[in-house]
Image (cartoon, rainbow, N blue to C red; front, side, top):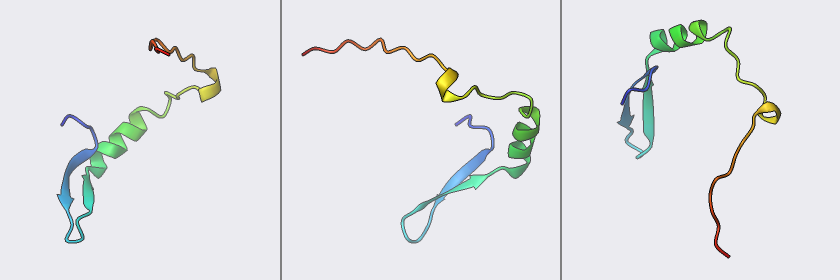
Length: 54
């Protein structure tokens, strides 16, 4: 629910799941985000706050 660009899904006769895409919404998403880029993974800062017990 709430995923833009995805209309639904269907189970094929083979048992595989097929996603039904909303092409108009995906086109809108792509054009509205063309000036917004994600920095390369090497530039992102990741923090690990998990506590591990040995």
